[in-house]
Length: 281
Image 1 (cartoon, rainbow, N blue to C red):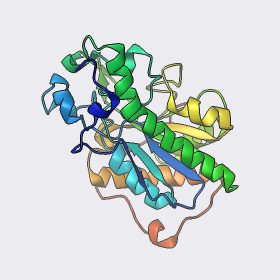
Image 2 (cartoon, helix red, strand yellow):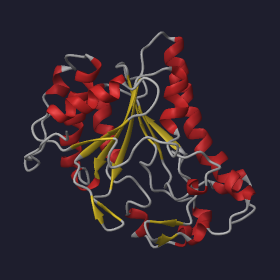
Image 3 (cartoon, rainbow, N blue to C red):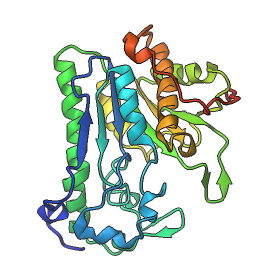
Image 4 (cartoon, rainbow, N blue to C red):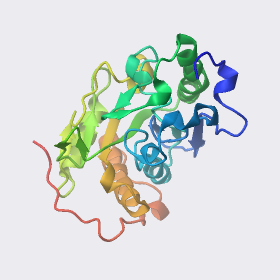
């Protein structure tokens, strides 16, 4: 795998590095999914992993693609998501960071990432990481040129247990520098929904490991939020619909938007997802 050219990373049978759903969405929201995909280029031979490993949280943010698709409909927003596994190259990391192409993840060895040459790392970045971020930048710049407001919503999901530690939160809202007023409003709006356990920069904080929101939202002075939802809550379609409704309502409140199209507002969470929720102080 070392020494491959950019052209040889993705073959003719591999998916494009990103997809855009509802590109013509008219709301101020732009939704993104850095870790929504689990594809591995055929020439990388599954990175030496079993298929079950590529379905785990180490390889993909479970449930994010489905959540993003439903949320894009509810908010009438574009949804840009990455097609490839974060183990091929992590699009929410600065490419030069070692964890952008990890050799181990949550105790699992990633043999296909061992002893890569700089040329091999650069090839993955150029083939996948670069086009994904170029697509986001192009959409943001086109919206600015058209005089359209943009609120950047970055969707992620987290495993209920990491390194043996159980996480109590249902969702977390991450924020750091820049226009974090929307993120704080989203946190408060989620916390006011009946019974959610909402983390404020939990179970992760927005720090130097994050790439996408800082590189796109901060220099453009855009309001933003990075959202983490616990994976067992959005593993299936009914959970994704329920959480899309939660997030859509909270996002509209945080942005000061009072209503959406009536037909979409009629969608309700599937039965069986009622919870006794509480907000995190």
